[in-house]
Length: 455
Image (cartoon, rainbow, N blue to C red):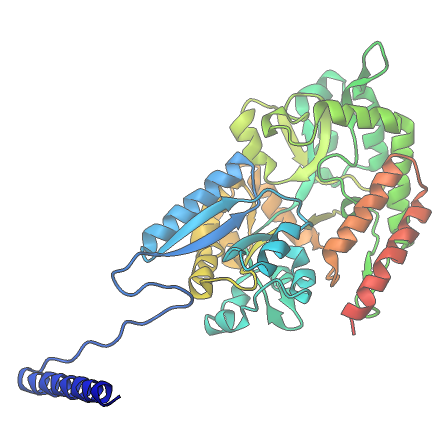
């Protein structure tokens, strides 16, 4: 014991002597003892060490989108040499975050995740997303984004993500096929307003073709193909899906039911099973984008988004197509809807400071300029809408349509609601349930989920 104490005492004396010598040296020479290096979160390295690695899970798989994201990542790392971003492809369903939830709970989640923005509130409520309010407020960042996207990233007055992009939906039509069928293309001129659904039905039947077995080899229009979702037609018919004040889903709104009846009747006329066979044949799950039936001339008209412009330029640059408003019941106004993606930092991120720095860059003007220019999406950074060089050719049509475009209702269980509506739509387009019955089942499924979230 005494030997140990003597050794400790001697070590302390030596340490004090060294400190006194350093202080005397500093006083004589004017030198200052170096401060300890600033530390960032997690395992951030000291000055001169290896860059901090931020793990970024990217859900996009389309080659155009992937190329744009990879360019943004490269630009960020060039401007931030102390951070390396590791992009991990994580293909998945837009409403299914099972893999993310499992990783977060197991402590193996990413630092940053590309997330479907309208569903942030639901996932924030489950505790799998980090609250980044303090970061955002320190940078006065929120007001830089489009107002509806600010609402989508907020849950109970706290911020859980940054908006990355948005979009608008419209009707694409194949000019060559319509002209060959004797259709006057002036009917599709946006200057004349939206074409009526009644007229689209007449034109579509002129384009339908079948083989000897009766199977469709070409169709004029399938309303539920591509972006022909429940919200697309519910909005086109003037319907309302949610009562925010009552915290109640309203899919049995008479105009939503009318939209679903339109889908039911269209499927019945074409033959629900025959339409499904056509989709399975010419648009199977996981098919490469260049085989899309609109690009190959199998579909004459479709509702889709601005991002298709980049697909056309990449895969079918000679396609003779036009764009106009989504068809509506005769007399109804122009309609569309917008959603988009965001960057979030899941709970338990190992490097939250660096994760936020990357999120801020990718969703800021530097990152969004690259993405908008390459993929033909629309920006959420509001001031970029005034940069005319970002919107060339047909892209300009979508930019001007944005003020007439609705956002998805702020349902606290938005992903679950989307899935419930999608199930109802499939039942209707397969003609296995009547619209009123299918939509009442949505209420029965959703309202018990919503009630505790709205308290």
